[in-house]
Image (cartoon, rainbow, N blue to C red; front, side):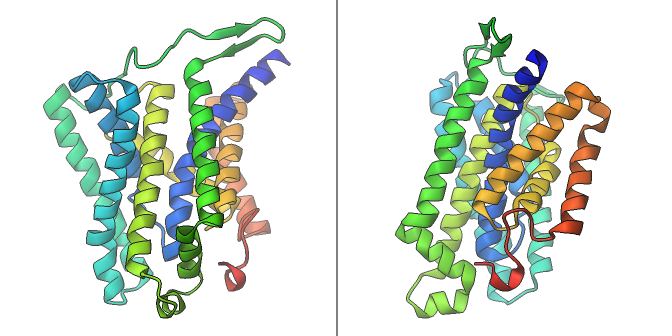
Length: 301
């Protein structure tokens, strides 16, 4: 039972990171109706910017985190203007935008790889040390070891999720985003600046990816140009399971994926961790294709 409680605590903190990452996917998909497969590269750049700020410049993680979020957000906006907007203005098929995002992801990863080699001579990975307290808090009854890093990340992630949900549901920008998600042409007739909504959506998605990348690096202890590839499929699984285009569904899916991963690793074996996650994806697609909290395409808004 003690081991089960410990694994539950670990799964909750990992789920917060996965949920943040999946939220960026869901946010762009809900407005544009297309997956931004460069989102994993933004996640990686969030971690990479944190590495530069803390290791090269020697600044505090308290400064590195907002810089990583803003930096990833600005890169995401650049992707909107370069990889998505020209195709959208020519009424290109959504598959063209999807392929464009794949090319952008490869470019961003290769750029990070070149910079990483320049700074660290190889791309095997860098383990950040001393950025946050690492000494665990031990609770004897029940036998739990609480990592301060994971507790801080969970707290900050929950704040970000609540703030995003409030923004989407209760602010003018959120209303405009939902209007654009429902029908772009109608939103434009209502006087909504659709282009502005697009780039603001990309910026917010990039901010979430940057935060998730930084948190992932702090928890799992490795930064390299390829960490986005490790989480990309997990993020896609999270939004499909939770519900494509659903903010709450992305959060639910992120936590579900984390719980399955952690419990499988602890009680079955790490070799089966991803297989069981994708088995869940397969079953959800069979039983409820729109996801747990998603709506059928005809009524999705």
